[in-house]
Length: 546
Image (tube, rainbow, N blue to C red; front, side, top):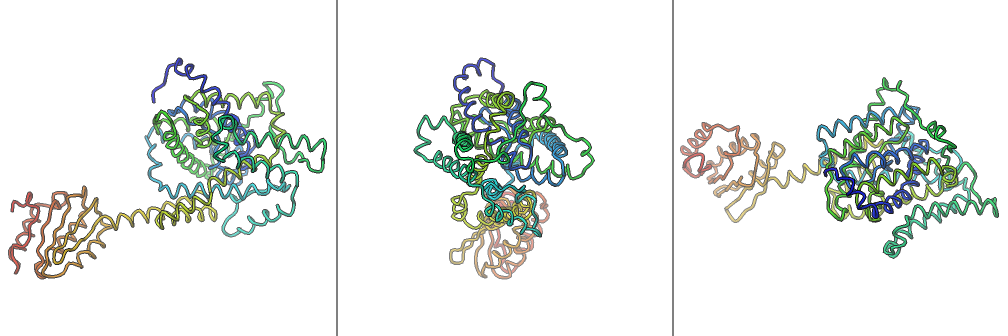
């Protein structure tokens, strides 16, 4: 996508202005909720939303993609902050991750998303959904103790993950539960087809209604039913600024002493990989949803995300990715250009500067409901049933990825999922690369595509089924590449075939095997000419001149 003249953006202002406001209303509670789930300062989520809108929107090649803090990174962020013991140290990792993404963009690594099986990617998102659900249970019940969530537990201390959840149900705040349950009900109703088809309700995002409900309920409860109100510990706490100087003092800056910590680089690499994957997947989805079917350049997107993460890390924000929930909201609201994303970022900035005290009225139970709903959509039962219907080759990598992430961590779990996914890919290619068909005493051995050394065992097995006194045709016309090991195995069979009175015809085999020399063909032909059956083989007429 080339940069458009300013007149182009102003021409679509009537569409982009309302769309940007709708995206802002969706993004504001999500920025706060994701920061809450990540164990980071709530202001850090708002910073990431601002950078995603004000900076990445113009650097990106996508017309409709919206960037900001993502639920898919909550696991990494929480675990990283716990590991490093400092949010300022974590910001160094965010900066390094941005540099890695920027370099990857210049190296044209935008195709990286194509190398991860979709079952593994969806397994990762489902695992994150389950983590979000489990982690928000204490916030949804009003549990007062600090709850870390599943990111911090290991296989050895898995019991420490379940006990806080049980404790949460033994320490329930009725006001928080009521707020969360009604907010969750609002979000579910808002997703129903009848509501989504109404133009009025389509313009008003469900998360905004859920937040408004929580604020109005708590204000009313404080006045008329104090026992059912929510205490200050369960409300959002965003720094309130009375002037520009106080606003600027709210930004947190990195602790550069962490440059020497090796763990920072491992965390940065994990962030860069997962953030890039989520961005590229979101970008692909946005391109499909775009009514004008515009295609965003993936390498430019990686550069934009890299710059965004560098800036976000420098001023105290969470890591950024392109996010499908806000992007789809932008499209549904009628957004046409990056101006809508910019407007959403500008609205976040203005709300933080001038309306922070009103944001602090929002109960955490509302944010917990939004995250519970988000987690359910990522790990809904229909997704598991869909993979079950697709068969074992899709279901097994999906389930193993989820299990591995929940019992180890995100990077190890993804690695295990990729290995399992590749196993099924290799297995499928192994079976499909070579086929043998039989019609009485006539056999056709077909090399269907690229045949490598991994297929040698299958080839030997199929050749062993050729019965004596028969005719075999080896057809390699569909192949583009044939490994030397495959040629060698066929050569060995050709040497012994005359002893069993097996006639062989070969098409397009040796001309695709550049490692074979013409002398080898002559030796093989000479062997056949002297065999008892004599002259029963035709080897690549074009090459041999037979």
